[in-house]
Image 1: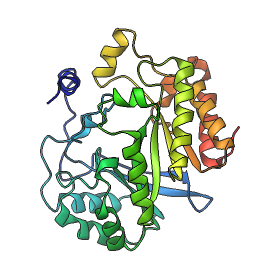
Image 2: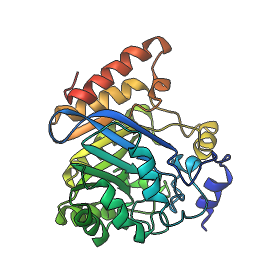
Image 3: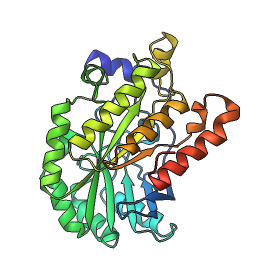
Image 4: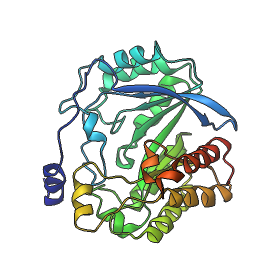
Length: 300
């Protein structure tokens, strides 16, 4: 284990207690779909083993397990959620890591998972670019539906990317996109707004640069996530003046500008985003403008 990984792990707080027999969260929310209209999406946050990459900015480990789940657990979690969620044409299976990591999702469970999701128009999973191989296309064939893989690009600023412990390069990301596209798999990408070591303006510029790079690689949908403290490492960087969360107006600007390109769908991640409001009194109006842009895909 290298020194950066050791430091990231040493600064963590405790995990939340989660049950491997049920997803730690599931919900239904509207999204402007690839069909060009607002449609419901069911999202299941699977209880799963932690991602092995230990990225500097990640807080998803807080709702993960330290060991692999038993075979059969993931299909059972999906059953549990789908029995309670309303009908939807699209499904996200997010597992706080990598869907095609065999230590996270047992390979023998893939046929059972496919049998549960084949009725959806789109099935969206998350995966590290270095773990995108022929298994992605094989799973799409098992499902008999359109697979979309969400890749964490994070940033196209090469120097910053190298400091995130992401253990990939921009060339790795581009190669992963090529492999997925060759298998007729759709791609969405996660882009981070205002990583450590950047000013507010640099954060905006890097996010726009990253969205443009993702579209150039064949990504059809980008989600812009404001970087937040709370995972230990970012709190430490904040104490030393190397990190400050972004302003909500910066997220508005990035969304408005990238939507004006008309190159693909772009969403602002609004999960607990009101905390980034420029002023507390502005939070409701700013959040409403962002939501409106998300749902119309029109700059406002």
